[in-house]
Length: 188
Image (cartoon, rainbow, N blue to C red; front, top):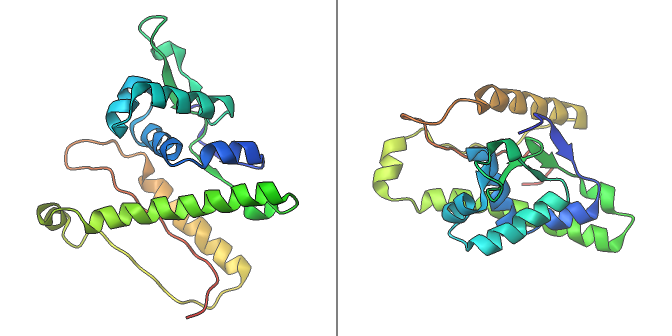
Protein backbone atom coordinates (compact mmCIF):
# COMPACT_ATOMS: atom_id res chain seq x y z
CA UNK A 1 0.00 0.00 0.00
CA UNK A 2 1.20 3.44 -0.73
CA UNK A 3 -0.65 5.10 2.13
CA UNK A 4 -1.60 4.11 5.64
CA UNK A 5 -4.47 6.59 5.51
CA UNK A 6 -8.19 5.96 5.29
CA UNK A 7 -9.60 7.57 2.14
CA UNK A 8 -12.82 9.54 2.49
CA UNK A 9 -15.01 9.09 -0.59
CA UNK A 10 -17.10 12.06 -1.64
CA UNK A 11 -17.46 11.22 -5.35
CA UNK A 12 -20.52 9.10 -6.10
CA UNK A 13 -18.79 7.59 -9.17
CA UNK A 14 -16.04 6.19 -6.95
CA UNK A 15 -18.65 4.93 -4.50
CA UNK A 16 -20.58 3.31 -7.39
CA UNK A 17 -17.40 1.51 -8.49
CA UNK A 18 -16.94 0.27 -4.95
CA UNK A 19 -20.57 -0.85 -4.71
CA UNK A 20 -20.02 -4.18 -6.39
CA UNK A 21 -19.58 -7.35 -4.30
CA UNK A 22 -16.66 -8.72 -6.32
CA UNK A 23 -14.83 -5.40 -6.29
CA UNK A 24 -15.21 -5.29 -2.51
CA UNK A 25 -13.82 -8.83 -2.32
CA UNK A 26 -10.87 -7.83 -4.48
CA UNK A 27 -10.13 -4.87 -2.24
CA UNK A 28 -10.40 -7.11 0.82
CA UNK A 29 -8.02 -9.65 -0.75
CA UNK A 30 -5.51 -6.89 -1.51
CA UNK A 31 -5.87 -5.60 2.06
CA UNK A 32 -5.30 -9.05 3.59
CA UNK A 33 -2.71 -10.52 1.21
CA UNK A 34 -1.04 -7.42 -0.22
CA UNK A 35 -0.30 -6.70 -3.89
CA UNK A 36 -1.44 -9.34 -6.36
CA UNK A 37 -1.90 -10.11 -10.03
CA UNK A 38 -5.24 -10.74 -11.73
CA UNK A 39 -4.44 -14.46 -11.92
CA UNK A 40 -3.68 -14.62 -8.19
CA UNK A 41 -6.91 -12.79 -7.40
CA UNK A 42 -8.83 -15.06 -9.78
CA UNK A 43 -7.57 -18.08 -7.86
CA UNK A 44 -8.42 -16.43 -4.54
CA UNK A 45 -11.98 -15.56 -5.57
CA UNK A 46 -12.78 -18.44 -7.92
CA UNK A 47 -13.54 -16.01 -10.75
CA UNK A 48 -12.32 -15.92 -14.36
CA UNK A 49 -9.16 -13.90 -14.96
CA UNK A 50 -10.91 -11.74 -17.59
CA UNK A 51 -13.64 -10.84 -15.10
CA UNK A 52 -11.05 -9.99 -12.44
CA UNK A 53 -9.07 -7.87 -14.92
CA UNK A 54 -12.18 -5.89 -15.80
CA UNK A 55 -12.99 -5.15 -12.16
CA UNK A 56 -9.37 -4.26 -11.37
CA UNK A 57 -9.42 -1.71 -14.20
CA UNK A 58 -12.63 -0.19 -12.81
CA UNK A 59 -11.09 0.08 -9.32
CA UNK A 60 -7.91 1.51 -10.85
CA UNK A 61 -9.77 4.06 -12.96
CA UNK A 62 -11.35 5.55 -9.84
CA UNK A 63 -8.12 5.55 -7.84
CA UNK A 64 -8.99 2.88 -5.29
CA UNK A 65 -6.11 0.66 -6.45
CA UNK A 66 -3.01 1.24 -8.55
CA UNK A 67 -0.51 -0.77 -10.49
CA UNK A 68 2.69 -1.85 -8.74
CA UNK A 69 5.05 -2.13 -11.74
CA UNK A 70 8.12 -2.68 -9.58
CA UNK A 71 6.75 -6.12 -8.65
CA UNK A 72 6.36 -7.32 -12.26
CA UNK A 73 8.88 -9.82 -13.61
CA UNK A 74 8.21 -8.74 -17.20
CA UNK A 75 6.11 -6.23 -19.19
CA UNK A 76 3.10 -8.55 -19.42
CA UNK A 77 2.74 -9.10 -15.69
CA UNK A 78 0.56 -6.53 -13.91
CA UNK A 79 0.50 -6.27 -10.13
CA UNK A 80 -2.10 -4.25 -8.24
CA UNK A 81 -2.14 -2.75 -4.75
CA UNK A 82 -4.45 -0.64 -2.63
CA UNK A 83 -3.89 3.10 -2.67
CA UNK A 84 -5.02 3.52 0.94
CA UNK A 85 -5.54 1.24 3.94
CA UNK A 86 -9.31 1.65 3.77
CA UNK A 87 -12.19 3.81 2.68
CA UNK A 88 -15.06 5.55 4.41
CA UNK A 89 -17.95 7.72 3.40
CA UNK A 90 -20.96 9.35 4.91
CA UNK A 91 -24.35 9.16 3.26
CA UNK A 92 -24.78 12.80 4.36
CA UNK A 93 -22.24 13.84 1.73
CA UNK A 94 -24.54 12.60 -1.05
CA UNK A 95 -27.94 13.90 0.07
CA UNK A 96 -28.04 16.82 -2.41
CA UNK A 97 -28.33 14.48 -5.40
CA UNK A 98 -31.00 11.74 -5.50
CA UNK A 99 -28.89 9.50 -7.77
CA UNK A 100 -25.85 9.88 -5.53
CA UNK A 101 -28.04 9.20 -2.49
CA UNK A 102 -29.17 5.92 -4.05
CA UNK A 103 -25.54 4.95 -4.72
CA UNK A 104 -24.51 5.79 -1.13
CA UNK A 105 -27.45 3.85 0.30
CA UNK A 106 -26.63 0.83 -1.89
CA UNK A 107 -22.96 0.97 -0.86
CA UNK A 108 -23.94 1.12 2.80
CA UNK A 109 -26.32 -1.83 2.39
CA UNK A 110 -23.71 -3.88 0.52
CA UNK A 111 -21.13 -3.17 3.21
CA UNK A 112 -23.44 -4.30 5.99
CA UNK A 113 -24.48 -7.44 4.08
CA UNK A 114 -20.87 -8.33 3.30
CA UNK A 115 -19.80 -7.92 6.93
CA UNK A 116 -22.76 -9.92 8.16
CA UNK A 117 -21.97 -12.68 5.66
CA UNK A 118 -18.49 -13.10 7.17
CA UNK A 119 -20.15 -13.81 10.52
CA UNK A 120 -22.68 -16.19 8.93
CA UNK A 121 -19.81 -18.05 7.27
CA UNK A 122 -18.19 -18.48 10.69
CA UNK A 123 -21.42 -19.86 12.16
CA UNK A 124 -21.50 -22.38 9.29
CA UNK A 125 -17.84 -23.38 9.72
CA UNK A 126 -17.13 -27.05 10.51
CA UNK A 127 -17.22 -28.04 14.17
CA UNK A 128 -13.47 -28.77 14.10
CA UNK A 129 -12.72 -25.21 13.04
CA UNK A 130 -15.02 -23.76 15.67
CA UNK A 131 -13.45 -26.04 18.32
CA UNK A 132 -9.97 -24.86 17.34
CA UNK A 133 -10.92 -21.27 18.04
CA UNK A 134 -12.88 -22.19 21.17
CA UNK A 135 -14.19 -19.10 22.90
CA UNK A 136 -11.78 -16.77 21.09
CA UNK A 137 -14.32 -15.76 18.45
CA UNK A 138 -16.60 -13.21 20.03
CA UNK A 139 -19.51 -10.92 19.67
CA UNK A 140 -20.44 -8.22 22.08
CA UNK A 141 -23.21 -5.73 22.40
CA UNK A 142 -24.07 -3.05 24.90
CA UNK A 143 -26.81 -0.50 25.33
CA UNK A 144 -25.13 2.71 26.45
CA UNK A 145 -26.30 6.25 27.20
CA UNK A 146 -23.95 8.55 25.27
CA UNK A 147 -23.61 11.95 23.68
CA UNK A 148 -22.37 12.16 20.07
CA UNK A 149 -18.95 13.21 21.38
CA UNK A 150 -18.79 10.23 23.76
CA UNK A 151 -19.70 7.83 20.91
CA UNK A 152 -16.96 9.45 18.77
CA UNK A 153 -14.50 8.86 21.62
CA UNK A 154 -15.46 5.18 21.84
CA UNK A 155 -15.02 4.92 18.06
CA UNK A 156 -11.51 6.34 18.31
CA UNK A 157 -10.62 4.02 21.19
CA UNK A 158 -11.89 0.90 19.39
CA UNK A 159 -10.01 1.86 16.22
CA UNK A 160 -6.83 2.43 18.25
CA UNK A 161 -7.11 -1.06 19.78
CA UNK A 162 -7.63 -2.67 16.36
CA UNK A 163 -4.79 -0.64 14.83
CA UNK A 164 -2.41 -2.02 17.47
CA UNK A 165 -3.19 -5.56 16.25
CA UNK A 166 -3.49 -4.79 12.53
CA UNK A 167 0.04 -5.35 11.23
CA UNK A 168 0.87 -8.69 12.80
CA UNK A 169 2.27 -11.01 10.13
CA UNK A 170 0.28 -14.02 8.96
CA UNK A 171 1.58 -17.53 9.42
CA UNK A 172 2.10 -20.13 12.08
CA UNK A 173 -0.92 -20.21 14.36
CA UNK A 174 -2.12 -16.85 13.04
CA UNK A 175 -5.05 -16.93 10.67
CA UNK A 176 -6.93 -14.08 9.02
CA UNK A 177 -9.63 -12.84 11.40
CA UNK A 178 -12.38 -10.39 10.51
CA UNK A 179 -13.36 -7.93 13.25
CA UNK A 180 -15.99 -5.26 12.88
CA UNK A 181 -18.02 -3.12 15.22
CA UNK A 182 -20.78 -0.60 14.89
CA UNK A 183 -21.89 1.97 17.40
CA UNK A 184 -25.15 3.55 16.31
CA UNK A 185 -28.06 5.22 18.06
CA UNK A 186 -30.94 2.79 18.47
CA UNK A 187 -33.91 1.74 20.54
CA UNK A 188 -34.46 -1.63 22.21
